Length: 236
Image (cartoon, rainbow, N blue to C red; front, side, top):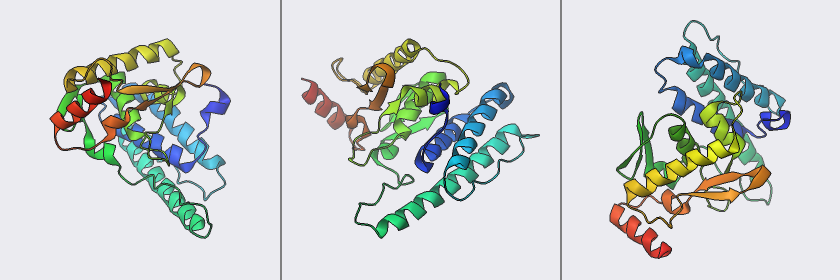
């Protein structure tokens, strides 16, 4: 990751990363093994927030003696700060003819369709066993939400690597691709989807590689058979 890529540029980006870290870290059995990642990730969030021309972010809580507890409380405080900035931006936009920015805290269809357990992702009641980095990658794609057009938001390689490996650890792009391919296979297998259906779509390639969740997997329908039949019909 370059120095340019280190900083997050908006409160929405900071909030997205903070929420991802919180959901993954709360499942850690021995957080002391992850102390370097905690420190590096928190530093990146707060460094980014301080550079924005907004009200000062809250201070991080001291790490000792309860490192994980302090990290989670610090993330909660930063998420609240991001929500306040989003509210202020919305109020300012109300006075302009431009459309309001999307509410980053509003749940979308994916939030209703997906849930995450300590050892699996669950899509509308269907359990997809995932752990470790594969779990973190899928969580990052689901948490990305939709863009202003309603299409699933693309997540670039740097953001995915941060979610699964931490920003201090260099990640080969081919390694990331292999793990995404493994997640695709698990989703197809558990949801009885055809091989022609791509659960994780490649949104960009090369230097700016990025991926997004397939739009059909963000629909919170009530019957699994209807969803599978709909996807099969599209692929057929």
